[in-house]
Length: 250
Image (cartoon, rainbow, N blue to C red):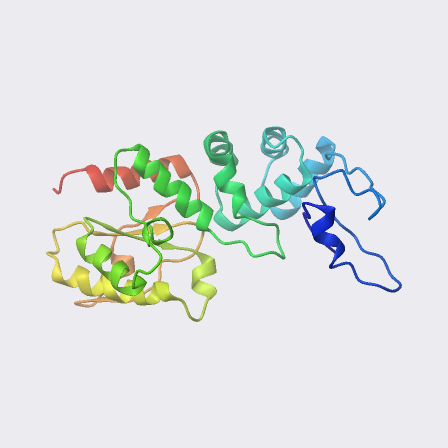
């Protein structure tokens, strides 16, 4: 099966010889001479609601109907939305609000169950929201330049940053090895060097993952620092994050 193929010329060289069938999905209707085309229409509303509620049984008929309407009953978009909502726990209302402003970002890096489904899009939308509030944000994927000694640059950005926002998710918790753990260790060392009355390390929950119980010294762990929860009312959580960064210290 070839999923989301763009051009017939690109796919021809990969088509196997011999018996059997090959399924190609594409938004390009021109497959003359390569394959017999069949138009896959959008879902009817009942199918859309059923798909969303299969992944999220707590969705009411009205909530599922609103999400389906916002997505035009498009099967792929519904699958991506179901994956995002189930993974992050975001409310349907917050999702629709985000969809109005950040549809490309939300769907550019998401895929239904069975595909790689990172939360990178959520991190990027969060960064965009902070920038819109006048807050300068450093992200490795947008600030690192080819040729940089990336580990050194990341550590310097942590040291120089006014705040360190640590984003936690179930996907991160399930990974046995990730460079984010190295960044967290380094950030904890920087946290220890700062005064206890200085707000600097801000934990953020992107989904229903628990804040890890890593030690930050003096008998405390990450869970002793008040976190921002983006898994429910995303807009409310973002407001809390902006206030944490912009509000003067008590």
